[in-house]
Image (cartoon, rainbow, N blue to C red; front, side):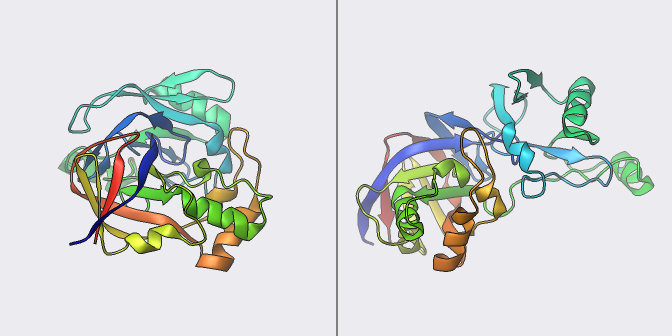
Amino acid sequence: MAEIQVGVVSELWRYPVKSLRGERMRELTVTDQGALGDRTFALRELKYGAIMSAKMWPWMLQLRGAWSVAPDGDGNGGTVRVELPDGSVIEGDSNAGAERLSALFKHPVRLERTRQAHITPEDLAAIQRGDAFLPQWKFYDEGPLHLLATGTLRHLSGLEGGEADFDPRRFRPNILIDTGDEAGEFIEDRWLGGVLEIGDARIGDMWPAIRCVMTTHPQDELPHAPAILRTAAQHHQAYVGVFAGARTPGTIRVGDPVILCA
């Protein structure tokens, strides 16, 4: 099996609350369920019971999720917080927090954690009566990990003409890999079918990540940018980066070399 270094870890991110902005990390613990503490919570709208996504609720990207107290090694416990645009903070999934979020969105909303155990008969009865919603196991849409190469972003920027800002925050990677000066292609395509060794983790089972309108929404100082998704669709069927799973759990740190085994 050939081994080649394809880059180094440039940035690490986790997103404690689905579709909210996340927190930048110096190191990331990768489990067989994804990055520890990633997408552990979501917002549920209470009129129809749907899990909310910034695809339909773009204003979610004006909020940021983080951990005040990180969960343990099994993903249990911890205290999540939601940072609001005015600088105030909601701690945990309390009723008071749900009231503030509902007022913010002008819609009944609450913060909800992924299911930690099997549904009890009492829970099932409440769901069947319509008194409760079915809790989900996970809140990511496709793969548990998302990886992205800086060279791909430069390639997209060149294809678009350099007017739009292909900032990696638009794509919400867990692992941003600095691939150096290499550009001119969608670099992750060459990783498909291989395994990436990063730190003491092994990441494989990669498949192309299809992008959606979330990449175009404003967040922080980034403006609305329809050209982001349009360029990806025109030149790569809207695929940018890869989703993946952890074959071997481990710890990944900024600066770690990324080795492709293929």
